[in-house]
Structures are given as C-alpha cells and as structure tokens.
Image 1: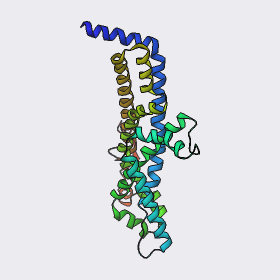
Image 2: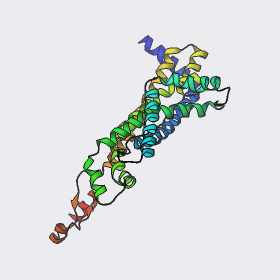
Image 3: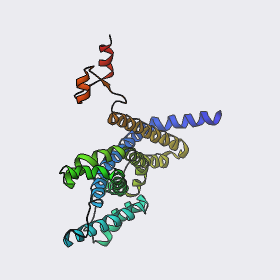
Image 4: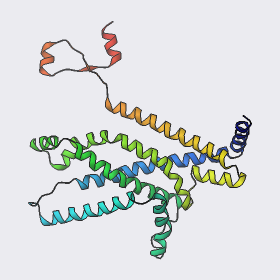
Length: 271
C-alpha cells in the first residue's frame, strides 16, 4: 500500500507541475492523428481507385501503358511504406532528403513534416484497404450499372464507392487508433506530442514510471473515446434495423409506393 501511496503522490506532483503540458501534448497527438488519418484516407482512396481501373488487351496501348506505370508506382509506394517502420520514414524524410538533395527537399516546419510522414504512411495502408473493399463488392453490381448505361466513373461514385466506404469504416477506425499511438515516434524529428512531453517531464523530475502511468492513461482515454465515436458513426450509417410500413393501403403496398416511420412516430400512431 505504501508503494501505491508513493506512486499516487508522485503522479499528483507531476500533474500539478506539468499537467498543462500533458494536455497540450494530448491535443497535439489528436490533431495529428485525426488530420493524418483523413489525408491518408484521401490518398488511399485515390490509390485504391487507380489500382482497380479496368483495362484489357483491346484498350489503346497508351492507356494500358499509363495504367501499368501508375499501378507499378502505387505498388512500390505501398510496399515501401508498409514494409518500413514509421520512425525510420520520419528520419529519412526529415533528415536524409535534405542531405541527398542539397537542402532542395527540406521541411523548415517540424509540424508539416510530422503531418506529411503520418499521412503518407496511413495512405499506404488505406490504399490496400480501399482496393480490397472495391474488389469485395459483388461484380454483378458493376455489370448491372454498366447495363443501364453508367460509365466507369458513374458506377464507382454512385454504386461501388458508397458501399466500399461503409465496409471499410472499421479499418479507418483502426488506422485512427494506431495513429494516435504511433504519433509517439514523431519526437525523433522534434514534434511536441504526448510522448515528447513525457520525455521532457522525466528529464526534469526523473519520475519515469509515474509519468508513464499518466501517459498510458491519457492514450487509453483517447483511444476509447475515438472507438466510441466511430462505433456511433457506424450505427448512424447503418440506419434503422427494422422498417415499419406507414400505411395499410394494400394498393400502395403492392405498387411499392410506401413510406417508413421512425420509432417515435410509430408509437404516436398506436395511441
């Protein structure tokens, strides 16, 4: 019990002196994770669509050549950024690029560099997620859309992508939670997020474990809150589980001219 009391005392001491810094670090972590996840989803969506554009031997050689090059570039991008640690990607982009380019490719702002690294890393994972999501949709839906005169662009935007996005929401949530934790490696280039604040507090007080307890609790709170919000978003996109027809007119029922009522309106109808 004495150890727990001492731990509680050290945590309270740390929070009283560095609580504001911990909160600012948590805000920086959330901002980076959310923004990078959104940008990464956009990158992944573009890459996923480009990888699934159909082509055949009957297409013009230029079209087939361009698509082959684009797919090769995307494949290299995906394999490189999925196959290497984010901390090394940050080191290479922030330190190695200026070195090999004579400062032509240099990030003067650490924040911009951190957003760039996490975004393109997330985009590599989302590219495969989107590609798999598109391929998981029944090919019959594409054939049906083409049969009624839709071109490939219209089919993708109106039929395939809405279903794909709904199906990959859990993976988007996973990437957001992973980014909340993985932003901790951005301290290597000087970005001040929660882990960087923890290192600073430990350097001042030498209270490593109490600071780690505070940090772990804050990471856990952030990931749990994000998980709850994402599950709520999934339920909203799912819509009602059951629909009740708001009319007893048999003619309307057989013709398909029916409307639906919400649960509250249904209760009012039965009063």
